[in-house]
Length: 247
Image (cartoon, rainbow, N blue to C red; front, side, top):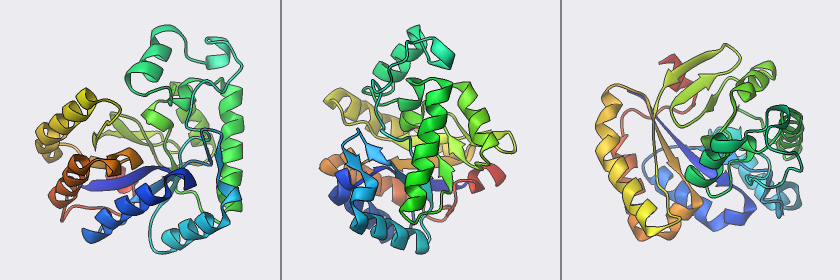
């Protein structure tokens, strides 16, 4: 089954970590998709770093896909009340913000109208940076069902969550294995490494995604495990996310 690689949280905030992840991938002849955050946590506006924008343009020209990855990559930046206009509330909000992320499931903390604005602003930012947008991935892979409809209406051909990859425009989806590491706590780090080692045989049945994060590059163990996954995927890498759906 095909394997696709991506680097999340691409931002001037993580310049050195992203470069280290790129080096790992390039050593295995992989060109990962780059998930770009237009203004990470509201403190790293991409357009204020023209040299970094130029670097991303260069990487896209070299064959790396560029995905819009939220806008702030942070929750708590909405003034709306949970439950208003599609904003997740209760157990759904708790799961998104406290279980699958450390308060970074941005699109599970906004109303439909706020989602539209962040999509508008994010698309505008990436285009002003000189980039073509190849897909959209919500932070923490967390998105309300209505977000798929919005992405489809905008013509997006690729997005993903924890369990599936999607072509929103054509309303297609496919189950997919995602392999990534969590480094917020020692327990999460150990359990994510164990999961990735145990789950790799599932590639016989599902297309796989290897998702690298900047924080992975700050741990020798996770750098080693990331390289192990890249070696494991050799021979089945695909250059575009939508090839996971079509294969």
